[in-house]
Length: 107
Image (cartoon, rainbow, N blue to C red; front, top):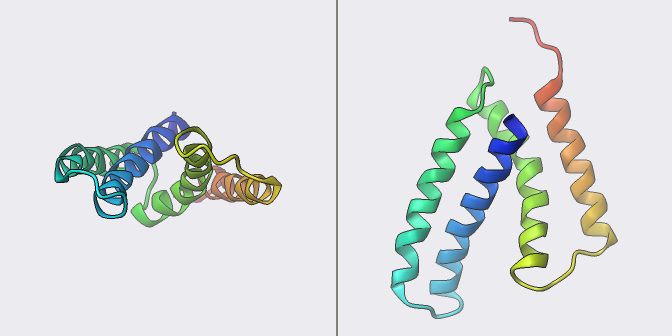
């Protein structure tokens, strides 16, 4: 369930950040900011749902999933397919995130 929360959180964060990018860099209407702010609030809420003992560890593990989701956004929304280095780097990040999430820890 944690990975699913992370994926949905990543999409919420990317969409929220993209709304700011669209307003600022693509000169879209300031109305783009309203759903972006809602999306960023949803992102924060979703990360708080992750069942892990420390916020910093939850954020660190999320980073790997965020990288993979960002490359998916690059491809699906921006129309730029990731290259082999993008994919290799993303795979490394997901492995790293999994180590952080799944490592046995004492209470």
